[in-house]
Amino acid sequence: MSGQGGESAPTLAAFPPRRIMRDEIVETLRAAVISGQLKAPQIYSAPILAEQFGVSPTPVREAMIQLANDGLFESVRNKGFRVREPSDEELDELAELRMLLEVPTVRRLAETGVAPQALAELRELAHGIEKAAADNDLIAHVKPGKLQQ
Image 1 (cartoon, rainbow, N blue to C red):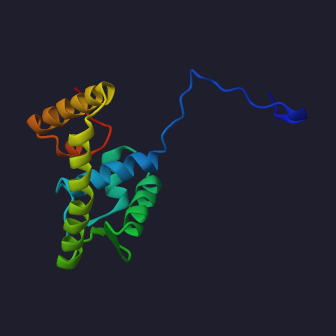
Image 2 (image 1 turned 180 degrees about the vertical axis):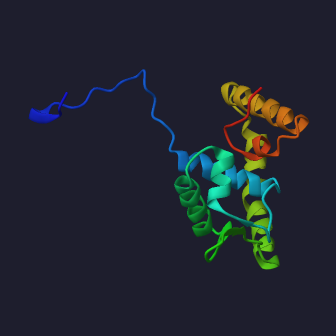
């Protein structure tokens, strides 16, 4: 359909929306930093990482720029990107924030319980985390929604 005359394009259920390559790379790079596979002060270049991902350097560069904007990487002029090390102050603030969020959340869950459907989903995620740990797959261990049983 052309979309002219008030017609809209059909929704094709057989074709789910594709994830953007940059978003996949952002998740993988973030997980690699969290798991310690990418570390400061090593400089990482987009073309070299792109080879490992099997993609062109552009989505890798875009992902690293996004992660630099998020504060996880810092740009090293004409060389690439380096994992940014948080300051002691930032780590203290993060620990405080986790306490403010996690303690009341766990207390509320303990008081109200968890719906059976949600509990089944959480168990499935927990099994995936255990499998990733047993396989020493640190990226799968920390990458949300990517765990396999």
